[in-house]
Image 1 (cartoon, rainbow, N blue to C red):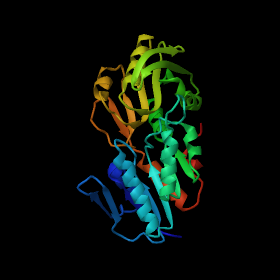
Image 2 (cartoon, one colour):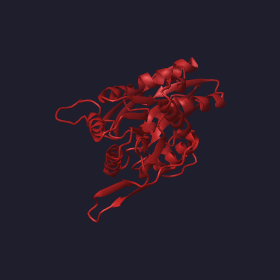
Image 3 (tube, rainbow, N blue to C red):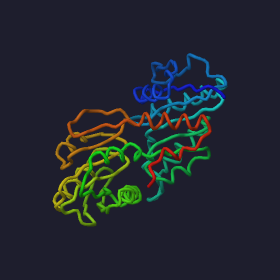
Image 4 (spheres, rainbow, N blue to C red):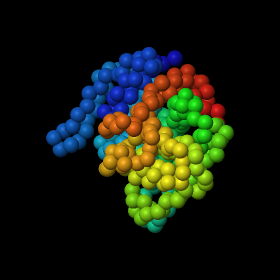
Length: 310
């Protein structure tokens, strides 16, 4: 069996080091930088010939993360790697996943095309913004779930009056899975946006009075939706409200929104680097989850055991 080599882009260095350690390998050596005009360059400084290469890079913050990923894939392919597996803990540009208005892009499909064209053999990701993105790839995609780290944490809390909530109608399936697993009810916060990152109206569909509410979502950006949802839920008589959100993008005035919200706790993963510390934020690591997935993929085993039975 070919050997495994794990490498990291600049955006996921800390997480990649954890994943490699949990797998039992050191992180592979690379060299990268920029020319004076901003053009990126990349090189593997150890052989990858005949190896199963795993490239870890969350595509967040800017276009450099994508370009670096494409260069890493291309360099591994041209250096005769046996397989080029791309581990993308957070898959950026995923929010534009359908043509819901005239003359707009479907960026999540475009990114899938670019990753495939660059030479990737397989993609591993976690909590994609929409399930249909799996179908945008013509190569194997292993879609892991944040519930694998969130469910054990929620069990430890031993909440007696638990109920789950989705901050928007689009997350209904996600929140229904959690509610089904814990055998409790769920509610929906129906929102209407005036434009991106701007909420015009929101209402809670369902009863939260006297309940300990857990908001569930795949990502938190400015925190506007979660903040408004938590405040509204508390106004409706909830006992407490916390949120479990896989990808802490946390841009704009996110810190201010979290501070001013009614959230008791914001539980996230380390799929992307945390931009600021906050007493309300608790980080759970997905390093063990990805390390197990890499081992099972390499040994041609099923990854189904990694999923919480929902």
